[in-house]
Amino acid sequence: MRLPPFLRTHGFQFVGKIHAGFLGQAFHYLNKGDDFYVEGYLEKAEKFYRMAIEKDPNNPIAHRNLGLVYQGRGLYRKAIKELELAMKEDPELDQVLKALEHCKKAARRKEEPVTEKFKIKWGKRGIQFNEKFTVVGEWNGTTEFTYEKYKSNSSKTALKFLQLQSVPYRFYYIEIDTPDGLVGRDINGIYNE
Image (cartoon, rainbow, N blue to C red; front, side, top):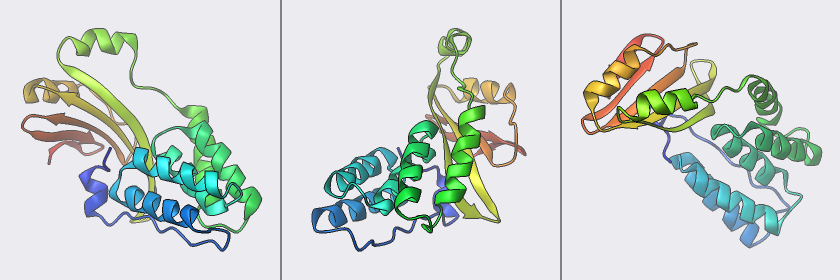
């Protein structure tokens, strides 16, 4: 999974710190995870952060980074666990407290967009839900971007679907990959990329 073009083009990036406890392979795995995270490949980043934790289980950087990956994928309970482990090891670690607060709020209010009713109504029309995730980053003072990602074989169906959707708040995006490109909806309306 890659981060949506909006985040890639507006300078969202993740900076990992080197921790003295990392040795050899653990350091290598952390760096590989950071590379994948920056590129938006969260599943691959997760794999490498988990490998770093296997080599150095008490490293707060690896736990923080894995927690941020889980947060980006909308796996808030897992993120909370990893971020709490990071805070236990290093209470001064960057981004942990803010991300932990966000995850606790999100875990309480998380709503899945895919229901049986959705699958019956829109699945027959060619709209397929992919994922919902939240990314934490800095852009104009905003720290949270939420995406619902879908696929459709028809741009016409995708536009009809978007017209019927509501966007609950600013920096919430509903995006559909179609054969003609990406179409989406935000608080300002429908857009094409």
